Length: 361
Ligand code: DP6
Image 1 (spheres, helix red, strand yellow):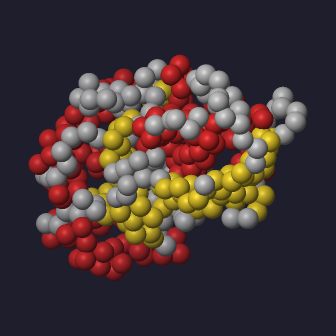
Image 2 (tube, protein in one colour):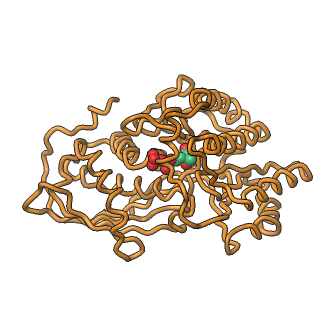
Image 3 (cartoon, protein in one colour):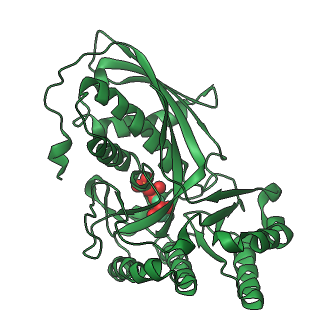
């Protein structure tokens, strides 16, 4: 597939007004995307667990309009008008109009809500942009009813990527690869693809408890952080490391070796933050409590031999990852020893999920 393949020829059907709702999950990267080229092409491949409970629900109402030389839309978050979301969506529309030529023919009302706090470091851009891309695909599906499910998902992921890179990994589950890797057959820079190899039972229903260390707005956005990789002294080594780690993950996922899994994902998380520490200008997104939690996890693992590990996104929150079969003891540990380090003791219990769902059509 090339980007050209997503440019539609003429549509056979026409539509006037309607409404569509999708819920789309967040995802947590195991091998991280950090650094990109033009047109939202990732500098290295990444792989993520799709989440199950952390999601965005987006209802898109569309009304045919007469004049059509600009985009016409309004955005609501939890029922409140959100004009500050509009520039990001305007940029998204600009990037995708060539693939969705009907965009200027409608007025859109975008009503969205999250099951988690916005800007908490949980990737709301991933669930939000993927939900919006899926709603737009549902409109295109009406214009082109012969579209296959495979094309629908691929193009939804392709569009979501143009909104926010990691969003392309939120359409399906449970393990999604994005970015070309010679180790992963079918992998693409243009959209996310399902991890195509055998995955051990140990990773089924894998748990992710998200500790909300700091729910405030991030000081440096991911987009700015990605751009700082352009002049970064360690960029090339980091990109190569991500390729190598994805390759190393294959036998780990197949054999179910949890110790090696934990070593790989923790190293990825700390390397991501090391890239931030060594950018110019440099920045720190971890908070003191992020480090307290990491040290507690390491101590608990040493004391008990249980398979609890962590990963971090571009923020202070900690994703505590562990297998379902050890969930009871580890969740007790989280509640007794880690939750105290969270802002207002807030945390979210999630687990690996299977992708977005349409709510109505
Ligand atoms: C640290 O996808 O939020 O979560 O493409 O600029 O919207 P943009 O960036 P974004 O970056 C996510 C980075 C990350 C790692 C990852 O999810 O792979």
